[in-house]
Image (cartoon, rainbow, N blue to C red; front, side, top):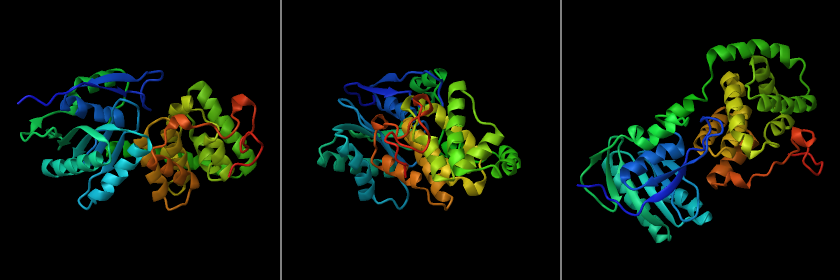
Length: 345
């Protein structure tokens, strides 16, 4: 049986953190379920498991979304959570891919297609997949077909072009785990830094340090990581780490804060993880941003920036709306002040 085919869709993929600097998005023509299954890891940055993925289709542009499919997942809540950002952004046409054992994936996919259709969102295609076989839910098929998304030409070409495509969300989380050797080095430098801290002075230093690495395309050393961890523990220092950043530089800031988080002491990860989450959102990497929010929240410390990013992600707020809140180093301002001279809370 030939795979169901229909009018091709044009999708944009490829502009993600972790890829070669200066790489431009790739336009992909999706004609078959195999093509769609290969697009998902390019859009998310990893190959999902036990997930529902919604891909916004032309005309128009909207968010792509992923949610867990767990044994106790409430399908009504799942559908509402995925539908809300589609309606908010005026998305009217989507493709749905559900990952689980085939029976459950097909059941969830059919439920999502029904709910979306009732809300006025056309489901052009819905595919259920278990990691090795797929069946089409919309239009329906019954005979499973083999697939290997990671060996599809779309993925192979993207990897050759510099895009990082991870095998699972767990592999994405692994990027945020502490590096024991680097943590030890940071810890040894910490005592030298702590005695010299002043929250006001350190906010200016945080901005200066980040701007220097941004201009030189470098990453902070152990002493700088120690000071950055301590600096962003204070509100002023934290504001100086994100409030002035331009969207065009967000990808490089992601790499800087991944470095910081890998060297950060376990009991001080809340603030650096929240800063990373913001930059990941700004860079368009929602999956990494969610992982960083989870790391921040798991620390047990309350961080308002983590809550802000969680809200941005939940609402599928587009990074294109971002306007820096603080004067950056290239505009002659000072950290911790907005353009009217008021303190940023």
